[in-house]
Image (tube, rainbow, N blue to C red; front, side, top):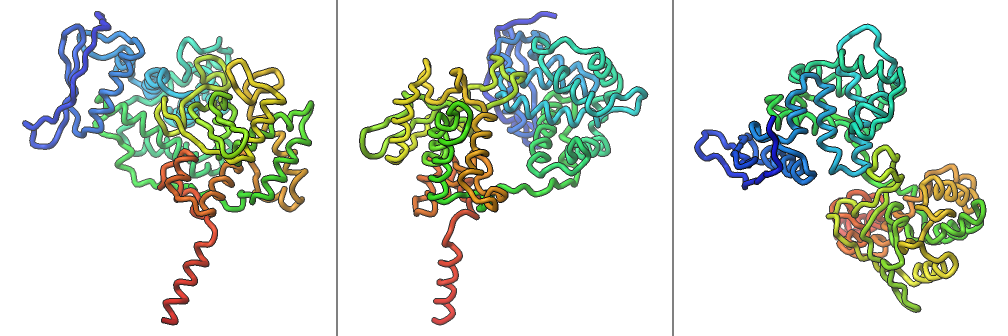
Length: 454
């Protein structure tokens, strides 16, 4: 097999000679031209994007077929199991750690369902462990398998359905039934089902791209996932007095003064509406903290926490760009004097890390979610009544961000400005926080009253 790194791509063009619209992807490897035709522009753009990503990560392309080696592996796969492993290998290099985690979680649910009835089937926990901890990892990240894991992998390889079986509706329904259930057999949440179905859809779309399937079989099935709840529950939102009391309580809890060290972190979530992953990544050079008046934070990085298995560095926190934004985007957030004062006091008392990070663990590392969550739960018990502690009120640190955005909207700050500060689009902002905006019913009632007496 002859390969080359000399790859050139051309613009997609519409094939006007065909009776039905189609789009042609063109590229060349070592000066040998290749092309593929797709019935929609979206499919053509997706295929071209996969080719470009393979070239960007330094993958060799076979000259004869024009395909990168990862695609050749998927093309040569005859079983669902082998195809999915090739898909994960193709996606892995450019996927965020959280995406890798979510992707393998979904596929570990689907693959055991897409198997033949063969003797010696391992139990569900063993199959899941074999997939999550070994088979669905790139070869260079796989640990040495235990005898039990090796046996499960051999069973999956032998029992996996043929790739062509995915054309059958009954096969796809097996996958959909699997993602609708939790590991304990109970119904999965609507958000979980939607997330896992999206991964299944992407795998099937990739099979269509490579012409292993004529069309995505999911589109033929009349199966409606349960409706998801996107709106924030207004019961989690604290008022300003409750927020102040919670922040004060934080300073009194935690071993070795941990709560006092973390108070400013929680303050950033409430007064600046930072996501927890954005707050733990905040650096001194990102902050403008004047002696008086309003300051400003420039948010440009997030450190979401994930199992080290899914990161390239082996660290539990992966430095990423802002959520739903480009890698180099920056979000300016004006901050009120009260937060300016808190941050200045925090820096005076605890200093900053070598990289300028404001918030560090006792050993100087990135603050773990378990650490700040434990402190938060202790602070709730101290600041709230027993009835409030048992309620959803500020149950998670993330709810401080919800409280901040709700406060801004109810204070009359225009939605576009709130969306910019919070890192949302306006339509998502209004949809998510629709139930947290107070006073709208009273205004509507007054207008109806006025109309009735007119």
